[in-house]
Image 1 (cartoon, rainbow, N blue to C red):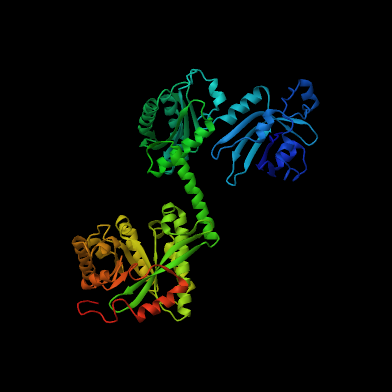
Image 2: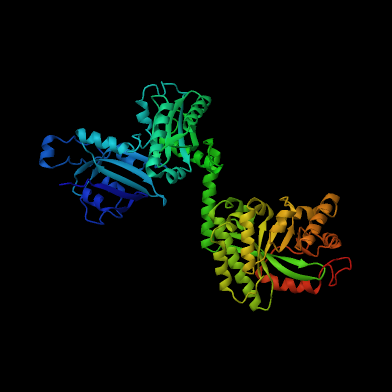
Length: 578
């Protein structure tokens, strides 16, 4: 009859057992649930080297008794540092069962997302069976490669790995097969497995006999090698990539793969191999982020910067959940007629530690992250809620929201926008306006054109923001059903004193008029700017010369005051063409 081998799991944080599975309770002799909340040291106090089990012990079904004497090995296990990526393994560890019996086990630790450590352990086998189980547990069944990299202690036993040279370098290269799913999709799982086996063969053929090639993930491999210089490492990686660049023949067809590589290179013995592997994965992240198919070396300062960015992103996520974000509103006005035509919503972060933060302090960190979608969705919802509140108070005004490139290309954007609109049926079409960058429209022209048309059908006009910086052609503009063009403030600010800026503004206004698009000038810093714009036929403006961004409670009073005594009067000059 088949008997299942027990493998226990303990989840530990701050020296406390948070959770233990059924096998852990059975192996250690505890009633179900009894291990939870116990100090981890309760099962680690028997750290004296165990007595080897004799054949008589085996026949009698007994195990060595624990001495209760702690050793440095036990203390080290209790305080072991487990890296954020990778695992730590400890063999021949003695755990103390409930009644003092010592269990000889092998243990493996892995850090979880909540910063706890998951320890897995199983009884130590012996003889031929132990060797067979050890081989199976440490090797990948598909490629027959090791499934982990060796420790420094294991490398010490490898001939010529460092030859006692204190200046010798240890390199760990982390390889990822870019878009390997395309191979699986094209050739099926069997074909994909064949490619992985061939990758393993080519990698082993490319490196020296004392190097280690391991398969550490589905389409991820690691190389452990030693060199005398980085140039030597560069040459070897070039040879590896050259081998992998040759076509793979499958089912009378051929395919090619692309590879991204992260490299951690340090003086031999300076860091544990587990740490080097983590560093190599960091480097791989930057190789993938740069577009893939490239080699990146680990840079400690860049890794720290990335870690800090991740922490800030998590703080931004928490800030959204805790309602720390708010909106400021900057007016857009008809300068010729002294009327407010709308407000632009601008996000702010009321940070509990750093105070009120401008977008430049946090938006660049999330531009290529899903958080920019969450933040943008919140801004849309909050803007509409505020517009509805103003309407209830007798103030009717439109609100425009800036939409990031990633957010507008989200597949369910229009669906989510429809739901926002449905929550406020009292708001007329056109109350919500969206603003997108001209550079985004040029880069993803087809998708953006569809997006603008879909918004237009929902009664949500779209404005092309920062116009003049993206070099749009008349052909592009004619095909984009945008409601308005927003002149980039860099040209508007300089037009009073710079003839070239004035000529650019004039050209854009002629283009907008010819296409039947409304033009709004950003960067109106003074009455003189407004006068210059109106002389060219542009009556709509926005900028610090009109008003700085303000919070919602200030808006009604500001609008009333502006329309009572506008800087440019109530009647449009004769030269102004509406």
